[in-house]
Amino acid sequence: MSCGHAVTPMSLTNWCRRLLEEGKSKFVCGQPNCNKEWPYVEVRKMALLTPKEREYFESTMAQNAARDYFNSKTCPGCKFSVTRKNESNLSVRCQICTERKGKPYEFCWQCLKEWKGPQPRSDRCDNDGCINEALKTLRTCPEIVFESVKNVRGCPSIRACPTCGSLLEHTSKYLNQQRDAAEYFEKILTLCSEEASQVFQGKLTNSTVCKECEDTIDEESEFLSLPLALVKSHKKYYSVVDGLEEFFKESHLDEDNQLYCDKCSQKSDASTLMLQVEVSLTTEESCMTPIGTQLIVWRTIMMRKES
Image (tube, rainbow, N blue to C red; front, top):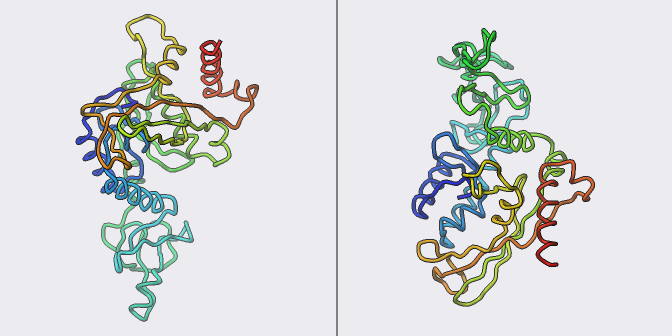
């Protein structure tokens, strides 16, 4: 996989299916301390998904993503998804249950039980056990001590992001690894406005050729960074040029890694190749972004090969 961990197609399919059943719309590596996100195009290719599996994966991903995007929750009465219009009021009215029961039906957005007590309220309803788990965690989390950082006391081990409200936990491991910075860079971009994300966004064209019928399928995928492998990682210095050449090199898929061909209606040997990269920025503008720097190096490599 692009994160560097090996997994069989069957294990990959089962793991990603489990994530979908848990309500996730994105696929991440399950190895300890990794959590690297896998693009669906990569999962579909490496898991050897059949047409039926593709249909299930794509429809479930869409449903889960829609629920997350529109900030919806399941009504305890009718089990349908309901969105909240007033972010400061925990009492939410379900129109379906209201119509079925012939009277207003409201439930608590926090504990997901039928509403009890006066409203509107932003802290809790009168149901037993209704509590904001995030606030409870922030109040009761222990302090953390950094052995490598001196004169820092009273630092909570868990804090909330002031932008999205997500809880983030301090750890004493991997403080200096570039992987953490890259992952958080992508996360911040995706949480920012759509315009800000598009500044750093590019497109890859992946061409797959079936060795049996020679049918070619070109697929586009969006990216915020290129997952470059650590080529000759035993050396003291890492070469981005070597990493880019490895990334754009043709790959051959055979034996256990065969791909399912819709035209042949069976799994066959295939080859896959990244054909091109597209970005909306000019060369001068792209120099100011991490992706732009990578692409300039890549263009230089391609020009050298052509000459």
